Amino acid sequence: MKKIRITSLIIGVFCSVFITGCMSDGEPANISLSILEIKMQKAMDPDGTFRKARSYVQKQMLIVKEGFWETEKGYIVEVKFKRPGKMLVIVKEDNVPVSSMIFNGDNAWLIDYKNKKRTSVKGEQLEKMRILFALGRPGSKYEEIFKEVKLFQDTIDGRPYYKIKCISKFEDQEPLIIYVGEHNFLTKRIDVPPNVKSIIDTYGLHDGVIIPELTSEIVNGIERRYKLIVYKLNVDIDDNEFYPPTF
Image 1 (cartoon, one colour):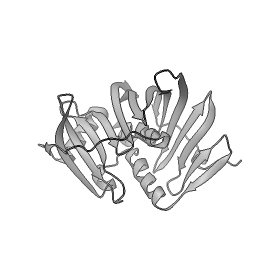
Image 2 (cartoon, helix red, strand yellow):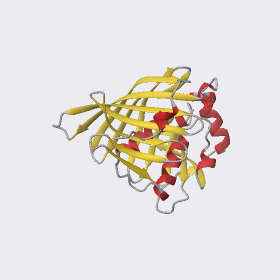
Image 3 (tube, one colour):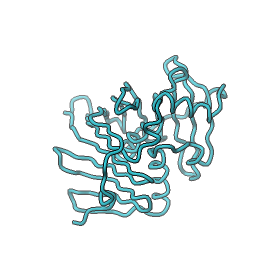
Image 4 (spheres, one colour):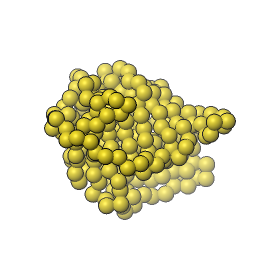
């Protein structure tokens, strides 16, 4: 399902950002959004396993390289989801937590483990975060999350794609852009102007679901590469994991 990729996008937004230029929208699509979503679901979640899942855990190796001559740094990024809307994104270095983003369905926090600091996310920032978390929730639909969704046909490197333009209710927030293969109905690229451009390099079958295995991002000139390590559905997760730690 298309939303599976969004869990990595949340990480990309959390870890921060590449400026994209203005682009034309392309030609009107030859398919409706509802039909496209059905085809995307069948392509990535053929048996409905993800849509029915009560929870999931995803772990990725994140390799960050700053500049041509700089050494690479490795992190483990873990995402946990539990119905109806709890989500945790945690970044670890040498298996030690560095930072995390926690959402328990009502409230959200940003955690700095090194400085033993937790910050409550409130107001408009919380509402924007809700949108990202909703995209990572099984069964969610674009038209239920965004103020308006437009669908076009476009090309990337000469290949045909459907371009989904998701317009937020926040006027200062530029549209989320998702490119989906016209023939395989798999997400190829996700742009969050002006900050994040994420490209899915390869997909694989994990726990009955077709999900991204290798993903590339450029963030302010910094190269990030994500490699899937673990993906598991219907994992038992304690509700306490979706609350901030006490320091």
